[in-house]
Amino acid sequence: MSVVVSRREVGVCRQEFEIEVPASEVDAEYLRVARDYRRRARIDGFRKGKAPLDLVRQRFAGSIGEDVSERLAPKYWQRASEEDGVHAMLPPSVAPVQAAPGQPLRFTVTVDVEPEVEIGDSRSFELPQPETEPSEAEVDELLEQVRLQRSTWAPVERAAARGDRVRGRIHRSALPGYVPEAAAEDDSDRDQDERGPATHDIDLELGDERAWPELTDNLTGLSAGQKADFARTETDEDVERQRSYEIEVQEVLERKLPDVDDDWASGLAATIETVDDLRRQLGEQVQARKTEQAGQQRTDALLDQLRERYPVTLPVAVVEREALQIARSYANNLARQGFDLERQQLPWEQLMEEIRPQAQKRAHSSFLLDRIARDDGVEATAEDLERALEIMARARNTNRGRLRRELEREGGLEMLRVELRRDRTVQALLAANAPPEEASAPADEPAAEGED
Image 1 (cartoon, rainbow, N blue to C red):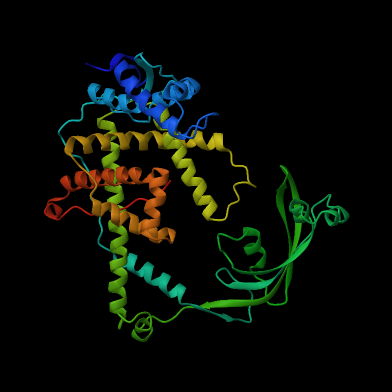
Image 2: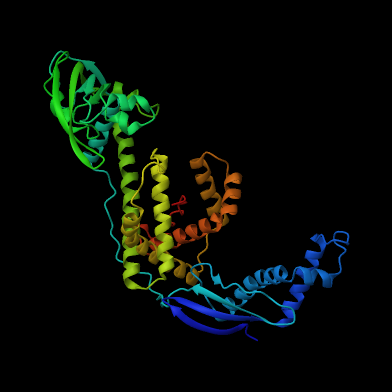
């Protein structure tokens, strides 16, 4: 006999189930819970665990009824979802209810379910085939980066030019309205302090994109011992003001690039003896990078075509959950870079609006990959999971066992399995659409993904 009394649509991909637990099951569970209460109950006049069961049932009727409901609801929802073939996209919401002895238990479950879509048998896609062979120009560019990394700086007796390194001092004036006495009263007021004058050392390369353009413009053409003044517009509490600066050059240095010869190349690594060896290794680095980029382009194209082929309307809550995960990942990245999230107020509402289109695409792709994985019987292996845990543990500077326990507590281990299964599904689809010369090669091992 079905435990589902009724089922109805209550929104986009949202259904409401009324489920009934037979009175016999309620009574059996009620007895088990009541006995558990008796073992723990302290009732005046009776030793712990020795109070009459009827008295315990009477004294704790409300709490026992709630516990019975909390035990039976998940069990019978699981049974109902299996009977009706329900594929929930989010944990269900169960309306509060209290069981009573001798009566069936009826409760209502609201759940966001998968949209209806027929995934065809076709696994063919038109995917790009980017060139992965390194060009001479790309190797030359990487070689030049190595030269820059191995370059030295030498003082010169001339005016500074773009690309030179300048050391000196910069003095800033106070912003209009700055009151030194007020700053002295509260040394902890950083905003007030930043309005005042200050002198700092400078050491920068002219033309560096991280430096103020005004610095490059005004330091260019100066020699050691020379000074220059400039003004810069700054915003203070949404008010634009100009602040004056004075810069003094103490030293101009010129970059000295090493000559590219076998002697220099052999000093870079034990595996390099000649310039040809160096260029060959750099070419391998370029090829590895281009291969990774090509793989990402093929994956992006596959997912784009998959979404276009199987359009769906997802539950709002599913997209919102994906958006929150993206926002959380963004905030974590900012925190790792030293951004003070408590001190700086981010425009979260605007950020969420900008994130939602990306969240919609990610949720759509994940849903389709999950469906294909289920239809094709794709699963992440134990080896996939252990490899992913090892990579994540190294990244977090912890051990695999401790990381596993943390993920189990937070519910992240199952999510990791889901992500690995999706990655295996993508790899299988890519392998099925590989160029003829790659068709016989095994699919790439799935790469473990970290937390957003």
